Length: 262
Image (cartoon, rainbow, N blue to C red; front, top):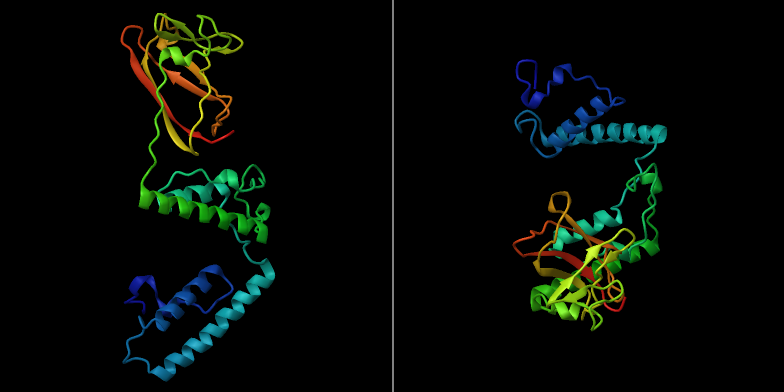
């Protein structure tokens, strides 16, 4: 590692022994690790006793320099995953889509961010909550792996979507000629579908079949609202953006998190 042969960009003849600068400390840390791991120098150039003495002396100087730096500037504060990051990590690791972050306390924001170390806490109680969520996620992953996904389906005819028997129904869709009809008005959405109950918490696919528009405006886009008085969604109010054709009926759907008994 001389001027004519500086492998890996390391030239020891020009490397000053200065551990008080980040660059100098990092360079000598690399030297220490390479010698410790036997990557340098060749065994014929330095005996075992000399290598041990070199490592002990350099390690002592590195530790002293690191201690001075900590005393002057302090340590970097530890960070943890926010509840959103934790949920995404668990989903990626276990291959599940079970909502988890609402089971954890909200993260405190500082300057608009939840990832600032000074605002993050990690008490015994919070750690216990994270571990409880991990247990539930593992139970869900094992249940799906061993038993598969539970299938559930419910079909509602246009007549069943209307809560009343007659043509008119307050805030609900109207039943006309075998079709369920709804439309947006200025103050509220006219056409709220009837409430349903689900057997267990989970993600459900909601699909509307044979959707078509009558006199659609603004290029054919129709905004619809889906609410329910019994089930609860991740979003309290779900907005659907549809682009139905006035001539050809089509299907429209979305995935929603439904919970039992809320």
